[in-house]
Image (cartoon, rainbow, N blue to C red; front, side):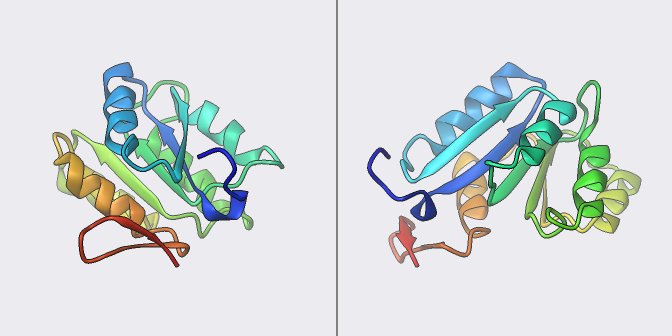
Length: 144
């Protein structure tokens, strides 16, 4: 929301190669004007955004299967970078096999969401990962 100090906003980086999924995530967070989304089409673009000195993200929501750099490779890069390793990550994917889930767990992801997912549940989960925000009793975003 214009006029708000940058520190009162939650910045989320989205990486998904499917335009429909990016549009859905944009719609999910539309009712929350305190959230700024940065959309990327693959892990390489997401990595570029993460390494921009003027950028700061509170959360990453990444697809697993993307061209150029996939979600697991992106998360491995993040966990290997001292200044990014504590970035909360939600992995959203249609893949739910045990091996993939185990690989993601070894990369210390914060949450693994299998598509299709409930929009409200994903939004609430995402908003809990910013230390500046909490959900109130009516499930609305509160500054902390």
